[in-house]
Image 1: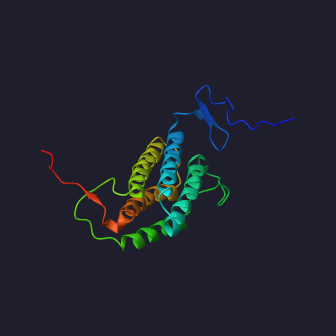
Image 2 (image 1 turned 180 degrees about the horizontal axis):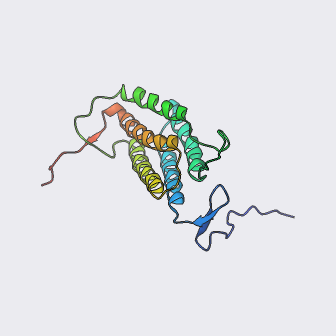
Image 3 (image 1 turned 60 degrees about the vertical axis):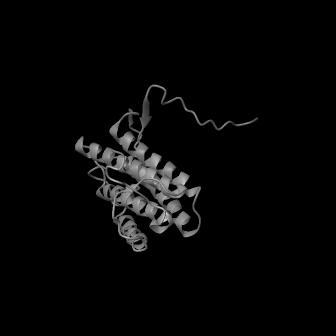
Length: 189
């Protein structure tokens, strides 16, 4: 007898899904929107990785794994009685590591003289796309907080730093700034 491992469950056919706590919510719930945008960011990093190798690819691979952690964090509303370490949460040390990586990559880049247009090399273009989707994930998390829902402070800081890291990584992937495309103010008037 063959056992089928189906991907579809039909449980979402009515427009609902379950959070990590098991709570049923609308697929349009603010929390689902936030971790959905994190998932989209992860997919953009997968696209960027098609064009990378070595240490840079290892960095993006680690970020992809951390984005799954972030998605789990966002999919699990915090409770007042939550014990430290009881749930998968983004840690301050992960935010600190992002800051160190931003500084290291940025040290190898020329100073900016203009706004950078998304594009250049294939990995840079994919990283710029990841950056913009990450910024949307951050806005969705802010909307969640503004609606009175809980989001861990390290998760918010991680989203903010990640978008900064993705900007610097995109510049770095543009031949350390040599292949960047710059905005030319009013050039098409």
